[in-house]
Length: 131
Image (tube, rainbow, N blue to C red; front, side, top):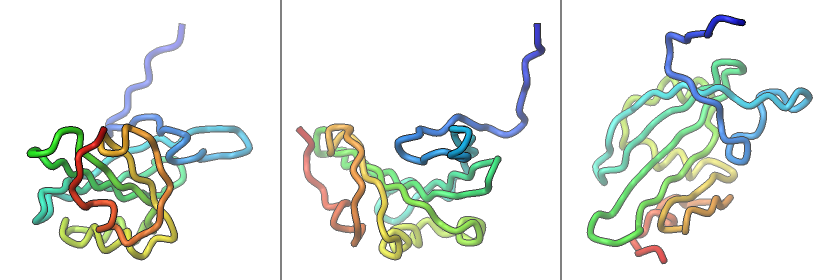
């Protein structure tokens, strides 16, 4: 029986639909660690995810409008590792999505469906209740 491998940094296997594979040839999913950047002026939670295998990085932005039922949503898109390392101000996050060729949106506002979209990011952050 093999011993249990313990990791010192929080990691989780990545959702292949969202992130693809770390190694397409071997169908190996990314192993992600997360770093919280903080909360922006709109109360959106900003997180950077990084694959510990290949170093690719993603920006994750989550916001909920508590006064609307099923209005939570998140945006997520790939960013360069140097951008991920330099991101320290949560208020800078939404503008980064506008520079991406595409990004994902999902959450209760979108009935939990994953959508590949283009910016501007603020279009996807307009408060509306989900169904």
